[in-house]
Image (cartoon, rainbow, N blue to C red; front, side, top):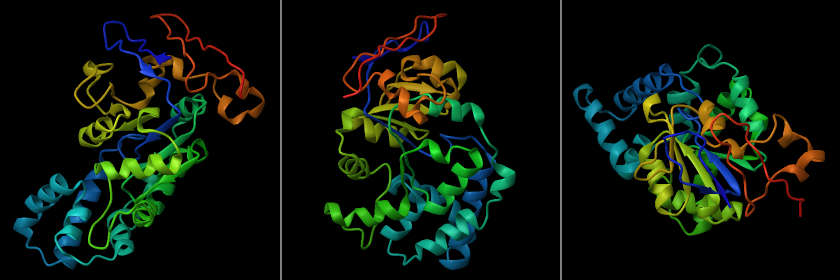
Length: 285
């Protein structure tokens, strides 16, 4: 009933077979150091040009708000600023980023995602347009069953009793994960969540989610730490780290082969070092 690690000498603790995989977007599905640098510059420019902050105080303020509220935007709203969210995202993301230059198709990642015959969703603090543009450039738009992004998370919050009149609901707020799980109809412990932020994975982990911290140095690949069950440099190491999660490339798109996957609650056999991953086949219910 577990998915084990195939990395010798590293974390060998098993993970329960998840019902759903949840992926962060930026710095998790791709790594492009220019993008966060540009976004950071644009956030500072927004605060200078539209909110009246002084140049000498912007850097410290953005860090303070990010650390205290999850995102600078959430911190600004909590501080009483009236912000047009569409204007913010246009200024910070799609109006500033040359997606065609910065991002490129990732066939290897696509093969990995298509080889996991489980429902996969995006959960990002970014807005819809940015999310769709990134996924399109990476060539993985059709690898996910759905997306949770800034706009729809904010729209769903009141439906779950969360007042966002003067606040923003986003990761790492535990309520974000709770809302997503309720909408997906799964318990937190049935979700495997991937994110590059230790705060985000730790928050999800505290609710019972299985978590993978993405973006660690190579020497820490396969390790376990407080708030996460597994650490990986990039998602390209996922087949080696959790080989039993994967079937054959394209399987998730071939309905005729769905009877071959091991479903939630069944056992996925872990590949020993140097061997091929094996999967316990069970009939589809």
